Length: 340
Image 1 (cartoon, rainbow, N blue to C red):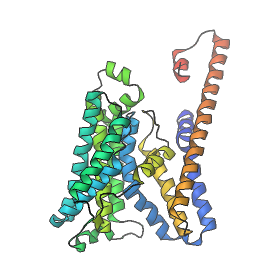
Image 2 (image 1 turned 90 degrees about the vertical axis):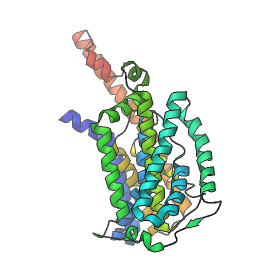
Image 3 (image 1 turned 90 degrees about the horizontal axis):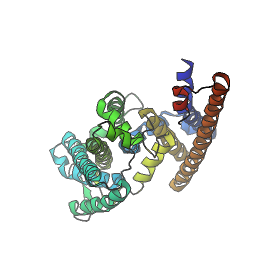
């Protein structure tokens, strides 16, 4: 019990403290931050940056990174507006499915060709953006009937909207998938120890395809929701989405080197970034200042993680030396605990 509590505190404690500190700070400096509108704004951030960070985190857990999410969101946003005449649900499902297919194709090619995902998705980022320009005929597309998107603007139970409810469902589904299914464990395996995973018979191609499919699907879903709520889509849309989503994932504690992170890391990361953005908005601060604060916070967190990990390794090594001095031999579990 004590060991589990220690692990939980090490995994989430620092992030939770930062989230609480951000909330308290804005409650002190901004009177309007205490209103329900701020809670609503934070939940709405889950419906855009949060959904994208969710899918992006799956590729990061797999030891890869999908740089094409912003372009995918823009393309699927255009497609959602184009097919919205057939109904809101059709538009959202079409964008989600289109993003999933696009992501799956990228994941399959990366795995089969052995190309670094950063290199491949840097190219697909440009190519997919080009398809967005073609699909939109190089100009913004607008809903022909704005009443189609009215349900997305509904607000209920004070804090929630259909968008935030969709985001919550997406987080629950992906979280359960990663934690309790064999394909989810395979994604962790190829990210944490790919050579060993291959030797153990883990289907790397299938796992990679699935990871990128989830990334594409969430990007398509977020792009569709944002464009349908706005009533229009532009091929050059969402230029900052990639950086915001990666920042949220890293702030939450998702590891860049694979095999590290849970759905709760993403939730906390998006909550921190969403709270910062909402708080800065109540202060009427320019958007670049909000991005500056997020960047500084990310750097500080990465530095803190480095020193915490270093202290943990030093503590384990000290414990190992005590065991050797007392028993004269090293138990196998002690070697595993020290990473040796």
